[in-house]
Image 1 (cartoon, rainbow, N blue to C red):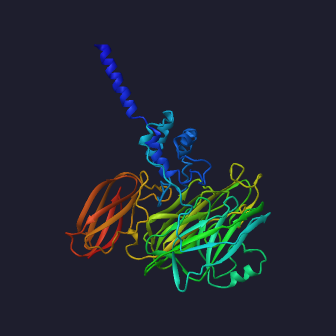
Image 2: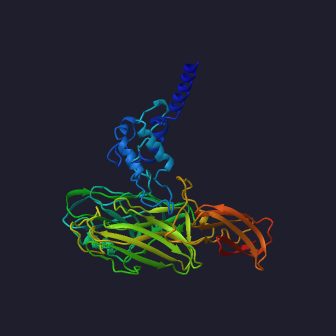
Image 3: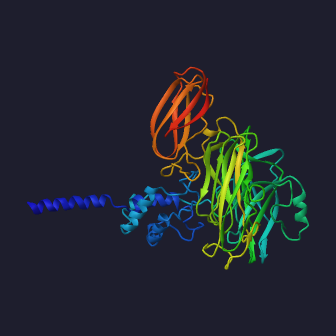
Length: 522
């Protein structure tokens, strides 16, 4: 009898183990198809494919190491500080699934249970653009960093157009360091091009024309610009597109035909997006100049005061070179509220991007944007281009340095806070910025004024118990709510249906500290 019971127990345990086994077909393939094979397929930019079980199995240990270290998928922004649209990162649960699969021997499981692999037949993200601007064929021969501008007429017809999507396609990714895209209505770039016997002309720092307007860019790791409906970068239909392509030193006999593919917004009332380096090493450093002596680690601080109007920020794009190690950016409103923008703890020059917010971020007039960047000019920096280390100063060359943070923004309209660029979540979104903000924060209620309900957001540095109180101007409470909070940002809705119209004060009480905002009930 004991032997029979033991056999039954063993069978139950074995069955349970089999049902819990993590396999390629059921568990891992869906993750890789969603997050990895966009690069890791035949013809993709990655060095090997992960489309088939046989391809993934032989590099299973490397996959585990890459996802545990969070080196792959490449996603430089710190998700514990701020979250962005279309994040490539894996959730903790997805990483755990891959680890279990590898530690369990990387079994295939039942192939019939695997989802169909994605089909990558499109060469471009924008298969049917309104304009394709391609530079003429250019043979690159340079012993030093070369910044070459190529002028391409748009010829999209009279009147203004608004770019809703832009895809920059390096013609020869092995030699294209980065690309900046400008629009220029003047004839000056055309004249400079005509004065140079070869295609394009050489220009450092910009196009050489004060009429040129930056409208986009590409660096390793960046993706296609896709603006939310109703927004776009304005150009005239018959402007000239200028591709400023940076080729690094030591290129000989290499052909490039970089292009940009553009789709225009349709309809009336399109709102203009402006792209500006609000943080830069020329005008905003507070402890400049940007000079990093050899064998030193230096920290630089910068700030920019927003003009006297609100704007809505769509994206942010930090830029440094090879000895940059980290960068953080935040802003403080006139009311004293501190809001995170972006933090990159381990800067990687080869994986940069234009990071769109999940929702448009309102920046009140007269806010101050702050930034801090760290540079490591020691032999311990594996990306240091100079061994032994040499003096590094601000400049355009790869061996020089920069401190730039571009903001893509539009003039604020009421309701912009509710415009969603990406509503998907990846893991737990609970930003923590205790190194910047050490006290509770109460952000502006939205909408304000409001008639039916109001959304109240705030930040607490630790978990605990918080209380929201709505008071009339005589100090009498008309609504209060006590609720538990975790460290980070919280959001609560207040139902206003039973509250009379008038002016009120909304207060957040946490650990003896109170924050208050004005509010109007319609």
